[in-house]
Amino acid sequence: MAVSRSYSNSRQQYRKSSSGSRAGRQAYQYGNVVVQPDYVPERQESPTRPKKKVSRQVRKNRRQALHMNSAYVVFLAIAALVALIVCVNYVRLQSSITSRSKNITVLQKELADMKEENTTKYNAVMDSVNLDEIREKAEGELGMVYASPDQIVEYDDPATDYVKQYENIPEDGALAQSDNNK
Image (cartoon, rainbow, N blue to C red; front, side, top):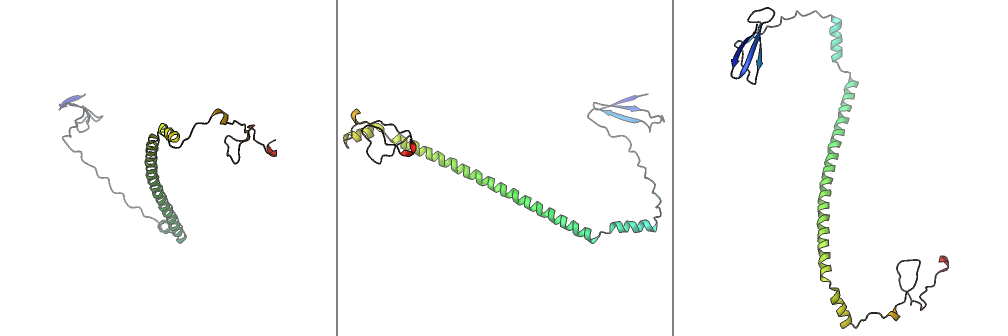
């Protein structure tokens, strides 16, 4: 047999336990508002257990188990010291990595600023150079002229892509090759 009651938008249903008494009913709460029960259940204190008598051998074994050997204490101290050293070195290494990372970031920013400044100055220099003005000054003030076709000598040098002139270029256009290149 189920009984329903309504409390501010929530439902409670009571079900009888197998004993059938009202105290044995269990409440199911539906909704988001939980209503405090009308009564507070009494706590039953657990009966204290009588202490068992422990034999003398068991007490002796327990005392001996609690006693630490001096070698074991030394081992634990060394292990704790090693763990401490490892932790300190780890923290020091992390700190070093962090500081180096910050230093790298600062240097990268400085490099980017220098590259930008260099590019700006290069572009300013390139914009200030007027090739037409240079040609006019060379021809007008310095008396330079373009080479005539009979002054141009073409030659073949299979060894390199550029030439350093240490002597006059021969009239036939062929350079003497060393005995090693033959």
